[in-house]
Image (tube, rainbow, N blue to C red; front, side, top):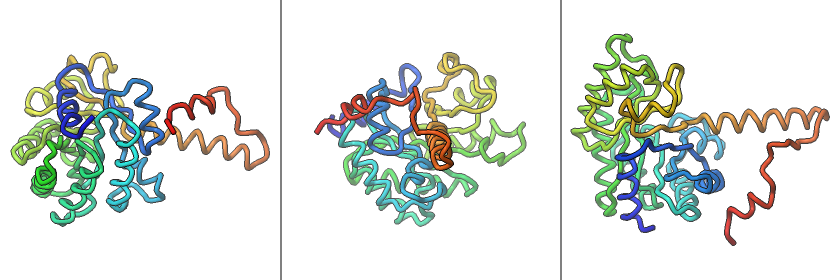
Length: 267
């Protein structure tokens, strides 16, 4: 799939059935999730950072994210979108350069977050990301993450209003989607999806309705976030702890057979 084709496919995936993204963190996990039916691959910023020995939180050098995206694009045949946290800098030129690296590696979508920074700063980062993508001739899908719910930035009764205020700003700056982590109450999901004017992305959170009900509430995209990576770290920790304590061999009934794993990757 060419990059323009992948960009078009990825944009259309937000318009039909609920888009499910079980976030990957390297070429292996990306290819595995693709083989299980994922229609697009999204990276988890935490998982990619941990895989390279960095903490989550804008510490990963952008060149390593770009290298990871390139490795994923090489092995999968579906669109790839990358979580870029806050763009790894508040310097707009640095953000534009980082986005250019990721786009050059083959990504057709990115996430950019506001965290605790002023919304106006994310607006300028979105504009910088679009400049970088336009310079490369890529119709980049920018998913703007509003952390109102995730970080409790305003009192509960004002969260819908503040999320919609930010959505309006980000849409005007060129955002293509709205990501609202920890938005979970059905009535609030419905209100945000109806008022945002952008496809709504949520993640698993306490109180989130069953997956089968989300599309009816207006959700376009459900990401796993760091949940799968966290679970894998927990599983590996248990196996390694038992082995290092000389209590057990690291063999489980749930292990995927070596031949099946190896067959995922053509020579």
